[in-house]
Image 1 (cartoon, one colour):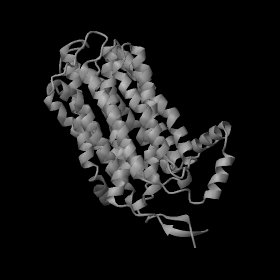
Image 2: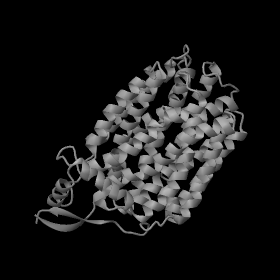
Image 3: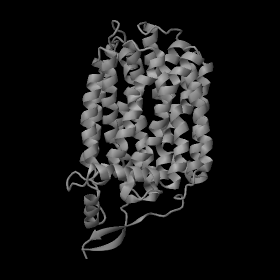
Image 4: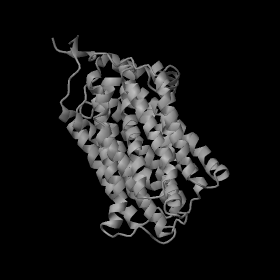
Length: 452
């Protein structure tokens, strides 16, 4: 055996679809969580100013889980299962169980614990999917790969977000229940989500393959040298403080972006119920109807992200990835801000079109820019560390927004969306500082062991 430089394999579009399809199930579960967990918390008796504290489980688990999973997946290799796919499968099993149990919660603490489990499980599956694209695709195909993930993210979120509304308004399944219980329409939505999550991820595991490490002897040596918890913690810490410059620049953009989206996920149900449906009574039909309508609103932004996912690479080729991301975030931010002026439920769908554009860009372009700036041997680890700049702003929002809403805005949740929109606009502007040096780089040439 000897090393010869060979071009990285150019995948067919069908292969890219197969390797991305698992994200359909992942986002199906994620969308059910985002659109319904605040509603579940409030139904089980949570006050509006405590919602952020209850949600802290989601970003905190991401902060802990993603870099560890990334680190472990970089050091995993199995002849049959590969490097990333074992984590896809394990996360899918755990997340499906949590999705099934979540709507059966009868007490607030049960729902809070299950959110921890659900979010950790989703992160176990989701983090290696980002590195999977970096592993398998050339620079020329990478934006298409992340755009394909964004398409499946949007498609999964569209269906999942609509399910409670469909069960209530098409199949006439009740969305209300006695105090302290979850309505059947939400329960059935989560049951379906558990099945979809598992089988979507399983499809990617079965239909996609992975290449072994470029130099197996060197990879085994590095794995042995880094063995042990102490070494792992040391390497993770060093990696965080020696991140590539482009990653640090994108971190600023991500911080403000994710404050915006997190505020939207946490407070849209309360905002719409209060601002458009005129109620704060969580046991009322109006509040539950508002919760169903938020699912429709989230369906719209998810559908827009799925539709525009494949348009982003074309726009990025014309004006550059960072400027495309800038425009999309600014449009999305102003869309979120505009919700404060809208009282008609139907008209609330309009700003979600703008939010969808920002969401599509957020799921595609930062990762496309980042993947070209990362060392290949640590792709999974750095993709996990990059998640810090998603979860840290969520932690900040979790601890701060409850106080802001209660004491400054007198429990008017709509102002959380305004703050989120402003933050998203700021994130868009900060794209000016990002150095996207991979834009003009041709396909990567890698060293692989092949027989002479």
